[in-house]
Image (cartoon, rainbow, N blue to C red; front, top):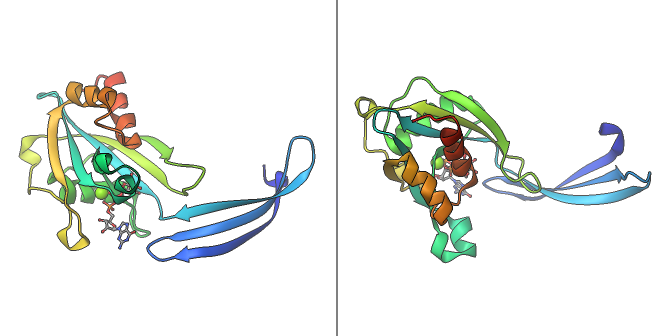
Length: 193
Ligand SMILES: Nc1nc2c(ncn2[C@@H]2O[C@H](COP(=O)(O)OP(=O)(O)O[C@H]3O[C@H](CO)[C@@H](O)[C@H](O)[C@@H]3O)[C@@H](O)[C@H]2O)c(=O)[nH]1
Ligand SMILES: [Mg+2]
């Protein structure tokens, strides 16, 4: 692959919360010709998400929160139902991040998680890779109400519902978040509950 790409240059278009680059490069097409190509790339690091499931109750834990990028394009869909998820700090691992996010966002203290997938969320535009996990939860692991970090302007509703209902919500369009759909389908295919 690397011999099909040369003369890569980067230009920072925006560096605020995250970094938007314009990357220019020469690309050799199958017919042998070289063309100068330009692509924008938004880098806000990598992320992780987790589906918490309870075998005895047949339930899963999801979150509901306001997402401005969705609202900006479709006001009616601004409240997004998602698995618990978070951005990975440079000094954190995906595992330690997701265990911390579970306590902050949904209020459970979990110890063991299982990574089941890695997924690029939008490869044409984002550098982000999501590390996707599943873990069992029980009522005994509940340590706080969840809700997210208020000082970071998070307001997260915790939803506990049967896996079967969550799967139905994918069909009805009530759930449209890709990582959530992937993890719910993983749970269904693998008979987690
Ligand atoms: N000021 C500012 N703060 C931001 C911005 N974007 C995020 N934040 C802050 O960073 C926090 C990020 O919360 P996390 O729980 O770590 O991430 P997330 O928003 O749930 O995002 C997760 O899901 C996304 C969607 O799938 C993923 O893109 C992301 O990587 C992560 O996994 C937010 O509460 C907010 O305080 C921004 O553009 N500006
Ligand atoms: Mg989050």
